[in-house]
Image (cartoon, rainbow, N blue to C red):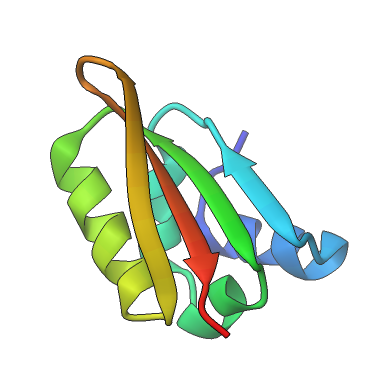
Length: 87
């Protein structure tokens, strides 16, 4: 279970993924406290958001970290944010 931004940061630094898919039932909010440098070490993100406010905050964070951001919405009240690092 993800409990903090520090926990996420530890996982990202330990495993060094190129792509991250997050479906962690609200713990996505911890991304907001992660360093932009840590986020930009990963090339692509897919993040499931059930909350419009959280989606907008995460979207802004990635846009401010040099990512192109878009989403798909397969169901009402669900957005999957897709962020690709700009080169």
